[in-house]
Amino acid sequence: MRATIPVKPALISTPKKIVLWMWKSPVGIYARKILNTFRPTANILRKLQVRQREKDALIWANETHYKTAFYSVIHPEEMILVDYVCSHVQKNASILDICCNQGRFLLELRRRGFSKLYGFDIMDQAIQTLRQSEDYNPDLIHVEHCLAQDYFLDKADNAFDWAITYTATIELIHPEFDIFKALERTVRKGMILVINENGHAYPRFYRLLHRLHGFRIVSTRKEGEITMIHSVKITQN
Ligand SMILES: C[S@@+](CC[C@H](N)C(=O)[O-])C[C@H]1O[C@@H](n2cnc3c(N)ncnc32)[C@H](O)[C@@H]1O
Image (cartoon, rainbow, N blue to C red; front, side):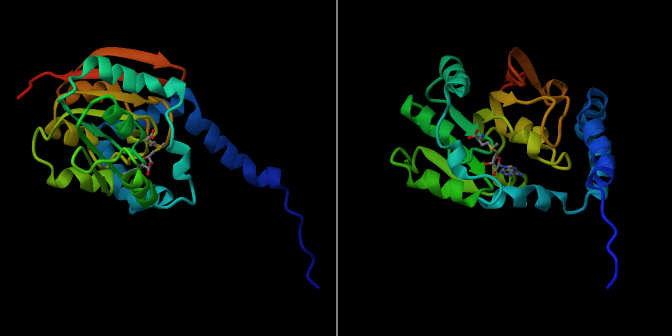
């Protein structure tokens, strides 16, 4: 019988631990922000990380990684997005919720009197759950089950007055897709984005991206690791 050499888990995991530590260190995050923010480096990443889009999305496509029930209710601290939208956006404005999951924010905005609501998400079960909700009305809430990378393709210029999102959404989308360019083309008035600027897979210089794509930041509000960034389009058509 061949003798087995005992494996020391600590020895195997140390390089990984070092990489993880560097990845999450302030220097690592800064370096990743540079790579993820600018088009030349984002395009290099696209060539190096072939099929990364599919890998990122597959985690979310079904419920093996995250259960959609996790996003069924708005917790009190998450209500800041809804309250802020209600006090800064007119009720007749159209609003796109980027990566809406089962639409907890869309449904709440609907209850608060908004009637031109849009959303998309790659999690099929989440979109189905939204469509089965008592408060869902397909004439008022328009949702699609698709990738962010595909959603904007058939949308007209200035299709939405406002875009909103509640964190761990844009931050999960590979920088090969220039989502801010898509938002610049399709959003007419402004955005209220709750973002973890330093966290998740793809940290970016989000405030710079707003400015580079024609949005002026009018206010920011930091709550722990997340920041709500309210911006308006500089040239409104
Ligand atoms: C952390 S959850 C947040 C959901 C929602 N904003 C909320 O707070 O209820 C992130 C969502 O982004 C979606 N997502 C991640 N990457 C995506 C992509 N490339 N295209 C479309 N949806 C994506 C996931 O399916 C998931 O529902």
